[in-house]
Length: 355
Image (cartoon, rainbow, N blue to C red; front, side, top):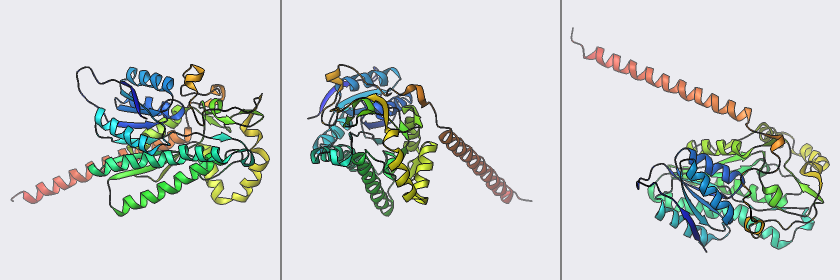
């Protein structure tokens, strides 16, 4: 069932900015992405399950100058996602950008995960992306334009221990998106789909994830703040023709290493992957948010950041360099284009002169 708790349009009735849908918008990367688009004055539809987080996200979007629309939805429910997309277009207008950021998972060895837990994690993390993409594509095709961004991970191409459900789902997203991209190219469509492969990010997932580890789960260093991910997703939405974006030096090294020496990484992760994903703090079994959101139960908004602020990087130097080079190249291209235009006009005028 889809429930809309909050909608705010500009008081003068004007509807400015792009219409952006963000799944998983109640916390973590999705929350940071929603804020980034809000700061650009866009209309942001916030899709997630957690009512407390959604309400807080809507307040942030409005304060930053965007227009929020809250839609409470479980992305694992195809019919609910379709209804949510209909609601967005009825309340805000035609969807320009769709960001798939929602996921849910479990930290445990394969033998400690039940079939039902694998099913649920796959339905949310993989099928949630498929359903969101289908909903966006259906509406974008009617207009012949739009951008779809999948929030991926380095773990989509290099799996690690204790995260088989998540890694498997992220691998599936890569395969699904690659297939869709070839279809769009075949159709010469102006709709674009891209994937942003992220490094370890300081999000609340390590506090709300279902876990059967003896110690508290943690991201593998180096860790980046969710705003780093949000800037990359925002850029990708504006430049979606590229197949993938890699964020963070750890992502680059991981994906290149996987291509060069996967067997070496197998052995390295077998030796280090357990300890690197756990703190020294004892934890034990934790039900987490695999089946139900935790914010209402806990009576709190988890926000975008997790508990690892002290060691998280506020920016990726590699991404900054990549963006800077891109801006310089674009600027150089613009100057070159202007110069070619001036030359054409000059010779056109010269040819028209009568001597």
